[in-house]
Image (cartoon, rainbow, N blue to C red; front, top):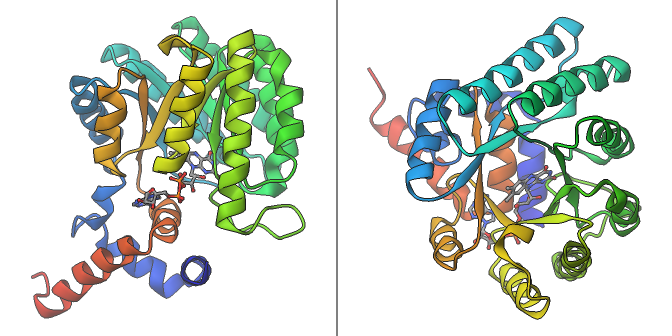
Length: 314
Ligand code: FDA
């Protein structure tokens, strides 16, 4: 937790993030978690994943835009991503962040842009997923998700096991019969609203996974178990066996570049595995969250930066 808080603190330091942003792609360490800076890079990475039997969810990195023009540009980019998936015959979808569509300053605009993206996807017979961001956005995200899903019936939503409210939110979501991506939660949240201890978050993750799987047996949810934690994966597999769920009634999801050994194990077990494939120039905040989840990642960044200090690029 200490290291995690330290990395969250560092991610607010412009001198650190701009050093990482300047060097990360050039020296390759960002490529471990980010497919590249362009949509073309992400499509190439996705084609490779398809050959390995994975489905994908493309994510154009970026968050918290502050003008309507930037929000509309994000909408255009998401629409282009859906069309590129179709043109390249790639199985999968896109993951969107509502703060990229103006949620901070114009909720109505944000909702209408999300509707447009879902409409384009629906025309092509495709789905979208909504990421869940920090808790300040949870209510608005649920509302917008609900509106989009009612209208187009092709949306999925991430929910976070560390929030106390999540079990109640699941009861609200059940009638929508949507894909629900269960994650532990990646933001720093206060003890008033979020579980702080890892073992307690893990216990709640298992409890919510069971709620989702039981809902899947009734047809209420398509659970997407999004984690790299072997204990969570073992629990999910037990529940799938207990409830005798067929592979099309659930899926697993993991992040590009993380625990490729587990990715292979899940795929070899005959389960659907969707890989979250992030790309874009604004990759630094995402990259810092991945560092905060696994302190060992910091060493390879530091090694890479130190190597450069001894062998500066010409
Ligand atoms: P945990 O953090 O306990 O890690 C378990 C093990 O996994 C570690 O011991 C390590 O081996 C490995 N591991 C985990 N993270 C690693 C990393 N960065 N580098 C290397 N190894 C790592 N969050 C959110 O708030 N909103 C969202 O919309 C999403 N969306 C999302 C989609 C998908 C497909 C995934 C897998 C995750 C998210 N998340 C997310 C992130 C999620 O909340 C969480 O922060 C990370 O998945 C890390 O938690 P784990 O469940 O993997 O377990």
